[in-house]
Length: 471
Ligand code: IFM
Image (cartoon, rainbow, N blue to C red; front, side, top):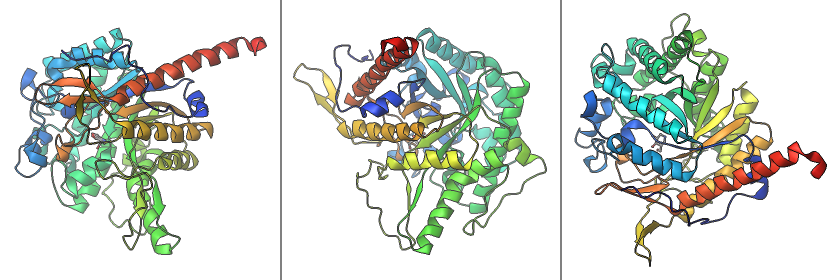
């Protein structure tokens, strides 16, 4: 039995300022996010093939405690209850990803009807609950069979991805609110192929650079294929971004900040919105690009997903960041102003489609506590404070004219945090992995209260707008 949010429990912390709440009341989508490998489990169920994350996580020494996603949150079997849980949060939208190896076990050839049916039912049930489905096609779980032929280092994988994208979009595209091709291609390229921290675990910078190009190319090819198929849903991509702050006015720090921003943010934004890779003295390796690639990559998108967690502190002498608001359990500095700096900077530098904040959240060492009434709770005031501050920064950016349409908290529930295994908890909902019991944290109640408040404000604002003589 999955506990839903109790109806009688309300607020657990300070809401954003009145002006931020007003800004976030108008035409704004509230959501929560997850991804397939992090929650689904059901690794061998329903005709799913192995992915590079199955291989990586089962390789000794690659993840904390040897953790893997074989069972994870068992969402593959518990999805109806999980959707009830999301509904009880009263969000508008749910962002999830499709596991490529679940719908096409080998990444080419035969489609797996059971896998496609799984996502079909998930989408239908979301709609029945009044939830907007936001789909991501690739959240890092490449079919292992494609890795055997070179994975993302092989240009051909981009064409396989386009075929996969088209098949999924043909199946779900009439009912979903958006389709993102990739989630955080920087992670796939750099963490997967340069630092070796993520699957498939290579340590080769030149390979990582070429992979980044193939990922962008695959995005362009997928967009082209989905458009040609007449898919109606808005199409875009999700990028992880950070602002970069020079530690001082020393030219070495300033140059480092430029390079970090160029390698992380502009490396993806410039090709997608300007049609070329950025130039920066600190960037020395460029990919092999075929004629026509950049035009494909720069084709117009309907939305941009931005994931924001922290900033870069650029110090040539490795001086530590001030960390005035402390750090999360991932060790990432809490820096909400960076979201404002980032969004206004993107707005200044590019002609952007509407933006969704597709991920923002914090890991915290959450603990279940018994209540006097015999139930359980998780007291997570730092998470509430984190979200409140980021929403205030977001609202300030919206006030300056950045077209931000929604916010998805990462994550709905605690889940498999990649190389950190189950040691990091990002959820609004606590998961006991032994029993699979879900317990909404204080932040879940706070988030629902926030959403309720903005909805009631929206009603008042609409009322005033409709009847100005009553002002
Ligand atoms: O858990 C990840 C997610 O898969 C992608 N964005 C960052 C999150 C937290 O590390």
